[in-house]
Image (cartoon, rainbow over all chains, first blue to last red):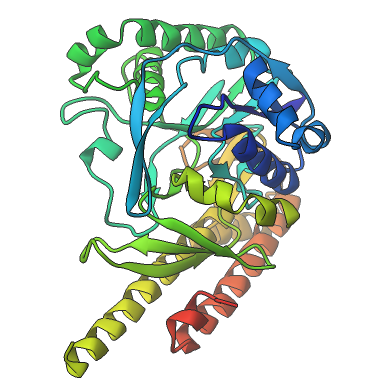
Amino acid sequence: MNKGIVILAHNNRKVDYSRMALIAAKFAGKNLGVPVSLITDDETIQWMQKSQIWKEAESIFDQIITTERPDTDNQRILYDGNDHDRVPFLNSNRSVIWHHTPYERSLLIDSDFLICSDNLNNYWDIDEDILISGGFNDIQGDRSGVLDRWVSETGTHLYWATAVMFTKNEKSKIFFQLVDYIRENYKYYADLFRFKSDQYRNDISFSVAKHILDGFEKSQISLPGVFTVQDKDILEKINDDERMIFLIKSSIDTESFYLVSIKDRDVHIMNKQSIIRHYERLMSL
Amino acid sequence: MDERLKNALDFSNYRQTLAAQRRSLNEKMQAKLTYGHNGGIFKIDRSLLTFVWSLCAGHRTADIVLLDQNDNPILIEDLEKFKTEIFDRYFSVTLEYHKEYDKIKKSRSVEKLVDYE
């Protein structure tokens, strides 16, 4: 069974997802030793060509696959340390991954998820058609709330679609079709599972789809919890040995930060601008 | 700011970083002790190591079924090879953990704790 990683990236006016996808691909390819493909749209490709990163993209990605750019009125507030901005969020077409992936066993990752270890290689041969990250693991340890673990106060377990591994077969096809159906009927499922419907979240659609397809039981097996550095934290520096140093927003004194470093750990860096600021450095490692 | 309060806050800042570094190191070690084999996923811990060791000592080494961390039955065709792999992994990971933990323990400033070059 051939295997590989897929990343979906659609640029918007505020966030250069193509640069983040390049960084994520470089780290994932190096640490897992499998090919990485990009699924993107024509406008993002034109941007990559204009901004001189197209050659780099062609050399890093196994395949660059084009799909339609999703329409969205979904917006969200992204923090960059103490600053914040309201940005469009083009996240409504995850299900196209099933059709476009060139691999029989795929690991779908978000472009802000940097794979810095080979831990996920343990999961390629697991006898499960769909594996999703089972939880959220904050770098500080005490900043996760109920809605980071459950789709709502009375809802089902929340999986994190930051990393999803699947085998391309009929069962996973049904799964992705169901994710699409839940997205199209988001308000209905929000009423049913008691989550807020004002902003579309893939994590919730994936969790509800998994809950339904698992026979309304909690799945026994999942990918490791997503180790996360939140968007109010800042990627400060990267050492030559790839150790990443972060400024972490204190949960006690919300005006101050403290330092934490990590190495050899897969990390979800929610502060997208702080990844992009270090583009040259991260690509040079 | 009063010098006494400043000193206390500086120390508190150091302790926050220390606690986060320790927790992250422990989680990294736990992740590295996860071992995929023949479609199953195992947590390499003392219980698994001891059980596998005792099976091998009793010459039960072929076609052994072990329950993985999700209690799924996984067939291990060659238990001696499995034993070597999990022991090697356990020793290399815990040795690295010890080295990094020791370094953290001896670091007396935030800069040293996080390896700020």
